[in-house]
Image (cartoon, rainbow, N blue to C red; front, side):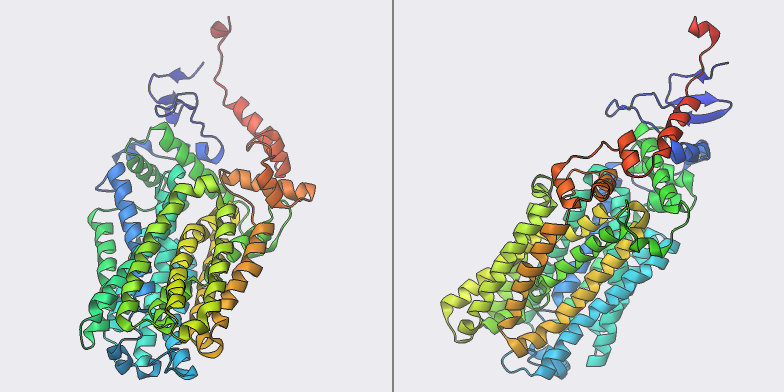
Length: 584
């Protein structure tokens, strides 16, 4: 007897309710197919219970906006914390409180003061790295929402301790604690937002988050300028304390609007009904919507792929068709290159760098504020051109421009110290230009590219390693900047020019495939095709000559030929019955 059909979005089969594969999606008229692990998972869902759940006070677009607001507040906090210290280091009240850092790498500084000042700034990065790595354990157990809250609370404690610091040792400890909280935040917030966002908006949202980092940097520069005109310790204590406000807003909004947990994390924990309910709330529809069911099926497939056979850490170091090791290295190098480009020489030390060029304390802070504003505005450009220009082209062109800019700064270094006004103007312009090139080509790119190029099965540990790469090279650059300026002067800029031109540009050109407009499955096929034919994945990605994802040829290239028969068998098995009368 054939199954009873209804005119709704459901099919009644032996008392069970499952989605009909041949119904049309109201949004695009596409067939929403849920097969494999996704179909099996749907059979396990208590649809009535899922429909009764209310995972948030908000629904649809309002919910998506609030998730973006909370995530954006976290990244603005990150940027503020990066930029705020730079304008405080040369304040008389700060140097009086922490005499070990007095003069830093300025004209009256010593190698010891430059090192201790750099350590005070850079030790924050070690805390960030520890927080990011601890998220491998903490994030999986607490979930995205509670990990973000924990990170925010730790940052509040760290900021309070920094604000109340009375000596150098206390400030060091406080900055490590603040970094620990920030590491948890920056390794969780992108995942939370991307897992709650529509797939077609994820790339732009990642770049938007990068722009919000620069917004935080900009705000810190202007606030530093405002409190420059005050006297006493409030001139540095209050700017540090303001970051507490960002953390409080983020945490309060998270719970006041009862934002939902990430559907990806919920499913991994076996909470399938809640997963479906959250997806429906994010889409502003009900749990029977074809788009919701398709997304649910995609999550089920992804989790099944990650858990298949159990993951072993040694898989990170294998190549073959999957090219795991190569792809992991691409993510690690992308994060490394962002740091060794020289951006943190400007972000963390801009006021000191401008004073070293020859500007007075007030003008250097005003220009820092303008520079931060330009940095934020130019970072928005990448959002609109990323899908047209492609990842490779932006990284290559901007690395070349960064190299030229740093070379000009190196050439003008000694002339600036001689008091040449024209050289000082050109040097300030170069600092603006460097931030512009970086914000377009490298700011958000190195958070986007590793997520795109890394295969699903190793994504979590590979992203942890790439994030660790970000923080450890961040530490090296921030720690070395002061002593380098004190020891080799113009050679500091020359070193970063060489790194951009001799290291970053050639490696990106020869080894970084284009990921523009390719799905994650397409990228798997690109690397497998390159391996099979002994080609460079870069040339394969640029040619676009790959089999269509899901086709028999693609499955063969990926070494999954057996899935062709399984897929055919599954479709035959689930074909609707045809009765004798229907056949006649």
